[in-house]
Image 1 (cartoon, rainbow, N blue to C red):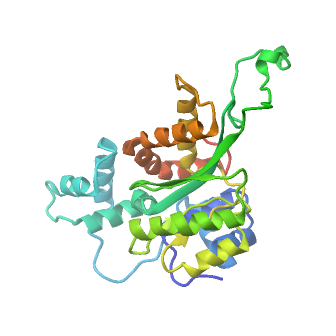
Image 2: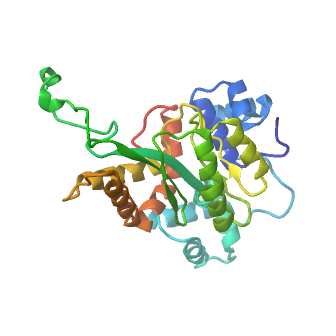
Length: 317
């Protein structure tokens, strides 16, 4: 079950996240496919030293960026959070006796905890349901304590002309994936079609080097045997990101679903049938800017840090 060699900082963060989310050592080991000894050691190091970075030291030349250089690089990041790797490297090299390359900058940033590059290799997915006449659990109202049964504060059921559509989508740092309409219920067979028809071509096209991760939650249809077997057959092309059960809501695509929901409510002319509703959803998704979803990916290190600080509880995200 355990893996050989030293864990990456990304994998160590997954260990700490699983333990902080309430999983036992055995449950964490089973979920992440590491040994119980590894889980215990990594989590103990985090509790005692407050960091997940590897303490393994290799032989070879001295690190090009020492503690002082890391502080310099940290100030550059704070001055421009959206700077590219090339820009950071160029600015760092100004006035330095020994210049560094982009690969060294990337390694240094990962060591410092700025692991944005890792999250750029993750494709996020989820499904959501949108209704014609009211929101699916997202209706919020203003009322006093004694107005809970006031008719104006209640959501009525629709007997005719109602219904809704369920849609599935994935996205990564680079682009949106396909938007797939789903029937009334998503089962393992339907999800297998989504995985083979949409997930597979997206992952192999966007990440041909096979160093990517596909994220899905722990819905029953996602964990079905036929789905697990399919992913196992294609594990040489991409990896399924381990996602803790009952995890805090870290999936950035949830924010995009909320964007779609708000835009639907703000329409001057509301959809009157399911076809119009589906077209409206497609139109709203098409107008979400690249800057918007890239900002969500950039927020992942902060999200993880917030969850760890809250010990697996609710955060601002």
